[in-house]
Image (cartoon, rainbow, N blue to C red; front, side, top):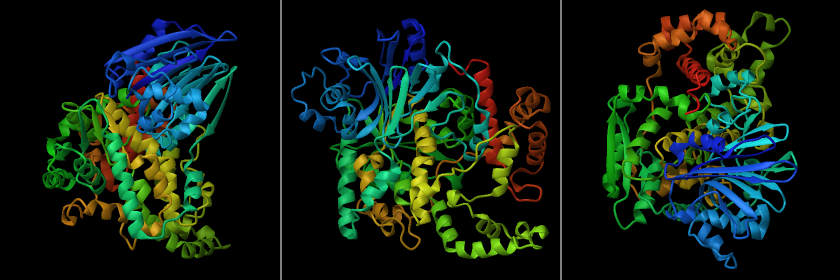
Length: 631
C-alpha cells in the first residue's frame, strides 16, 4: 500500500519537483520513498515516484520505482496483488530477488504484455513504463478500490494516487469545473471519470490507459455490464450448491487478504458483512483476531454493543472506542485536505476515527465493503422494487395528468409525494434513480451557468429489466467506487492504514453475477445468501436487527456550532465574488433552512444534506484557494 505519482512530459520537471509532488502523499506511505526521472524519445522525459507503506517484504528489496533485471521495464504500484504467489509459479524463468508482489507485476508484463492484468486478483493502481516500446501504462483495479488521477494537456500526462501531487506539479491548470457541481451537491461525491477540475480525470475502474508518442488510448479490461451478462450465462440454480461455493470463495478471499508481514485486524460494526468477514478470519487464525469498533453515546446510532457481542461470541481481541460529537467535529477541518475534492458523505468522519483507533495496533484491516451492492442490501433496492411494481399504474396517472385541458391544472404536482414520484418516473435512462424532485431542482438552481444532468443518464446500457438488479449494477459503477471505496481509502490512508475488502475479490464478484436474484433478495429478505453464510458462524439473534451505519448529526451541527461559518460562506457578497453559485437563491434557501431546519417551511424537505454538501464545497474551496490544499 502506498501512493504513486509521476509523468511523461516534454516540460522540464526536476527530481526535486517530483519529490515535492510525492511528499504531498506522505500519509499514504511514511516508510520509504523513491523518485526517478528517465530520458525518453521525441523530447519526452518520464518521472516515477512512490511513497511506501511496507506490507510485504519489508526490506529494501521492495523499494520503488522497481525495475526489471534488464532495465526495460520500470513500475510504481499502489495496492496488493493477492494471488501473486500463484502467478509467480508460472514465472520461474524470471530471476526474482524479492518476495513482494511488485516484482511479479514486472515479470508478468515481460511474459504476457499488458494483458497480464487479466491474471491479477487484487486492488491496485499501477504505472508501468516500457523503454523498448516507449509506452507508459496506467492501470486501475476492476472495481476501483485504489484511486488514480491524471492530468492531460496536449502532449503531457501527469498522474497520481491523489490530486495533491498533480496540483503541486508546475504548469498544471487549476480551473474549477463548475458544470459538475450540481451533480456533486445531489450525490455528495464526484464520479469517475470526472473531477472538480478541468483537464484532470479519474481513471475509471477496470480501465487501462496507454500513452505513446503524445497520444493516449483507453480501454476496459473488466467492465461491470459486460462481465455481469457473461457470467449470467452460467447461472447456478441450486441454492445449497451456490451457498457452499460462495462460502468457499469468501474463505479463500479472506485467507489471501490475511497475508501480511505486519499486524492485521478487522473493522467490526456488528452488521452482517463485517461480522461474517471477521468470523471467517477468526476461523483461519491460530490466535484471537484484533477487531475494532466505534460507539456512539446516542442509543439510536450505536451499534458498538452488537459488535461487542459478536466479538465475544467469536473470541476476538476486541477494542471499542466511544466517541462524542466533539471528537467527530474536530475532524471536519481535515476533510478537504485528505479528500482532495469536494466529498460530503459525512460517514467519512467516524470512518476516520475507527481507522485511527485500528492504526494504534495494526497496519492492515479487513472490511465488509461491497456486500450491499453485490448482494442487494440497501433499503433503496426495496423502493426500486415497489416502484417497478407500480410503474404501469404510474404511466396511466402520468398520461391522464398530461391530457389536453388537464395539464394546465397542474394536477400531478398536487398529488401525494409517492404518487407524484412514481408517475413522474418516465425517463428510461434514470428509471431506478427516482427521488425527491425538489432536491434535484435545488441542486441545479444553486449553481450558475451550464450544468451536467444531476442523474446518471446511462441505465439502458445495462440491458436489465429487473430494476433492482439494474440499480445494483449502477451502484457498482458509481456509488461504490465514487463514494464508499473513496471514503474508506482516504479515511484509512489518512492514518497510513491499509483496508482490504474480501467481498470485492474478483472471483467473489464474478460468482455473484451467476446467482439468481432470488438468492440475494427473497420476499423482502435482503442479502439472503450472505446472511445464511453469516449464520453458519454467528447465531441469528446476534445479527438480525435494522441496519444503522455511521451517522453524523448534520442538522444539529449546521444550525449550531457551524452556523456562523456557513453563514460567512453564504453571504451575498461572498457568493457574488466567488462567481459559482446563485447568490439570491442560496441566501434564500439558507435563510429558510436556518429558520425551519429539516422540517422545512411547507414542503417538508430535508435540506441538511444539501447544506452539508454546500458547506463541504466551500470549505474545500477556501482550502484550495489558500494553498492549504497542497500539504
